[in-house]
Length: 127
Length: 127
DNA sequence: ATAATAATAGTAACGATTATCATTATTGTT
DNA sequence: AACAATAATGATAATCGTTACTATTATTAT
Image (cartoon, rainbow over all chains, first blue to last red; front, side):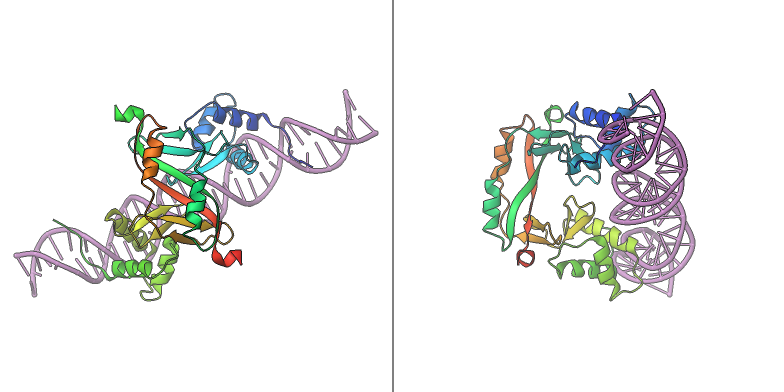
C-alpha cells in the first residue's frame, strides 16, 4: 500500500522542474515555487525532491559542482555542462549501454550501469 | 617563477594518496597522515589537496557521493563504484575520446572532454 | 645570520543539506 | 459532514564537508 498523501507543494515542485530544461538546484526550485506558494519552506522543497527522486519521478544529478541538480525527465540520458557559464544541456540520445560491456571486460566485478557528463561550450558561449 | 615552498606535510599527503588505490576522501587522508604527523591540521590537508590538484599532480573526483574523492594518479581513466560497499576501482584503459565526437553530433555547442563513472558490484561484493 | 614570505595549526565561518517538532492538511471511514 | 489516523508542512536547529582567517613557524634566497 502506498502511504503517501497528496500535497500542492509537491505538485508545484514537480511542475517547476518539468517546466524548465535548466537542470536546476534545490534553491532555484525553492525560489521558483515561492512565486506561487510564498511561504513554502526550503525544507519542504528538499524533502519532496528527495521523495520524487526516490520514486523515480525525477532524477538527482551529481555533476561534481558541489551542489545537487535535478532533472524532471527521468528517462536516462547524458548531459553537457558548459565550462564558461555552467549551463547544463541534454544530449538527446539513448545512453550507450554497450559501454557497460566494454568496461566489464576491464573489470573483475560486475557492471550494470554508468553515467557520463560532457564538458564544453554551449551554443551561446561559443558565440 | 614558482613561488611555492616545500613542506613535509604536503609530501606526506601526496605519499598517502600515491600509496592507496582506494580514491579516498580528504578526511581519510587526514587520518592517514596523522599517523606520521599527529598534529597536522585538517585545513592543511584540504589546502594541499587543492594545491596538488590545481598543479595537476593529483585529481579531484566528483563522483556524486556528496564528498570529494582524490586520486594520486593524474592519468585520465574511468572509475567503477560498487553500489554495495562504495569501493572505487580503476578501469585500466584509456578514456574513449571518440565519445566526444559522438556527443558533438548531438549538441549545438562544442565538446572537448567528458567524464564517466560505472556502477556495479566489485569482485568482493559479487562473492 | 637575515629578511621575505609561503605554509602551518587552530579555529571560526560558511553553504548545502538533513533532522526535529509542533501544527496543519489529506485521506479513508463512519 | 464529522472523525480519527497520519502524512506533510513551516520554522528552525543541527550536521557535515569545506573554506577562510590569523597569529606563528618553516623554508628559501641572499
